[in-house]
Amino acid sequence: MNQPGEPFQGKGIVTEAVSAVARHAMRQFGLVRIYAMPYRTNPASAKVLEKAGYTLEGRLRKAVIKDGTIIDQLLYAFVAEQP
Image (cartoon, rainbow, N blue to C red):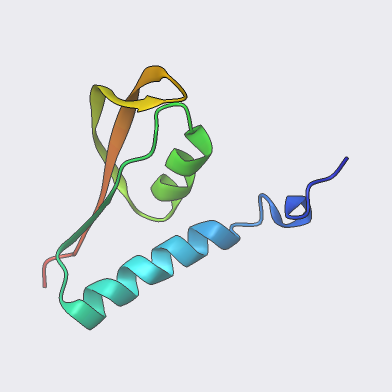
């Protein structure tokens, strides 16, 4: 059975939204850095961040508990370009 959002998956919609929000926030608020920390067990989120221009900076080993299991988190950052 299809999920409601399935027809929209793989079209780059979320990637474009993440990128647009990051760039807007940097311009609007003068931010230099935005970061995200998806679970290691969520490769789809990591892929979206990478395609949106975020860079993997590290892995926080055994950083969180999810559903009773201790798992790693990944650290991604979007950093403003220097003028």
